Length: 258
Image 1 (cartoon, rainbow, N blue to C red):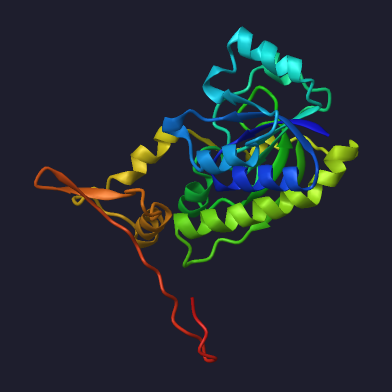
Image 2: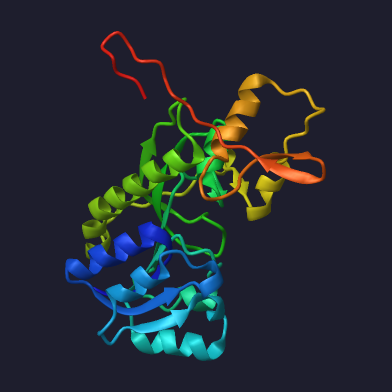
């Protein structure tokens, strides 16, 4: 399989590395520019010393870059935590389509911060491999795996669980995708939820003069606990005071706790 991979963060690194180790040909790699990149050096190192073409993900709409992608003759594109929207003129270049690994149980939590919104809004958490269309995480579903949200989970711990589940799901479904026999089904639009990057702004500031239901406040604080990111805060003497929540479950009768 000749591939173009669009990768960011730890999960993108791991998927790319796994594809290379199993012998798939990564003809092209699309990465985020430095200011939006996570694990960029590790991702680039996977294709170091090969003939893989490395492209800037912020420039995919440039006709010259599209021509470079076309010249790769990749059969499929694989996207993992890639934040740029892909247009029709890009998607049509791959005979076997473009697939994405998204850390949410679609159609719940399309877009950004699915780990946050599963805690704050109580929506099911999980991971999904789906085909990419011109919408934001709206394409046909190939495979999914639900991930339980524990009462002691923070945004950080849930994100890590989603990363590990996502890698496992991708590895399980990839052989069927390669063979062109993977199942696909349309998403149920009646259950869809979606969020943008700036949506967390409306929950991050804790108003000291406002009355909150205890559960709602705890859920916001734990959802936004993700060191080293600042998360939720309140204002005091003109400065923001950031909060991080630690949750420790009481041991059960066998001495086990979380």
